[in-house]
Amino acid sequence: MTFAFETAKYGDPEIQFSGVSPTVVMQWIVGFRRERVLLYSGDIIDTEEALRIGLVNQVVPDDELEDKTMRYARRVVTVDQVAV
Image (cartoon, rainbow, N blue to C red; front, top):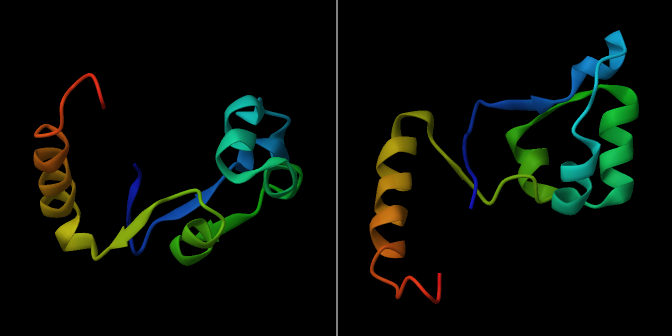
């Protein structure tokens, strides 16, 4: 589960400087084709686009992030740990 600030930005700009990218992990999250577009270009995307492509699960106002994540965590700990 990935919560995101509504003002957050995402990208992998290291590619523009010949850096190593997280190619193995990202394709499992957003899919191979979307991963390639982001990694080859080094483009930065906003939270709405990150939500649309599945990079994040939920977008919350910046000042509510901690409250929302803690509420979710409290719900998860009530579920049987074997099931989780």
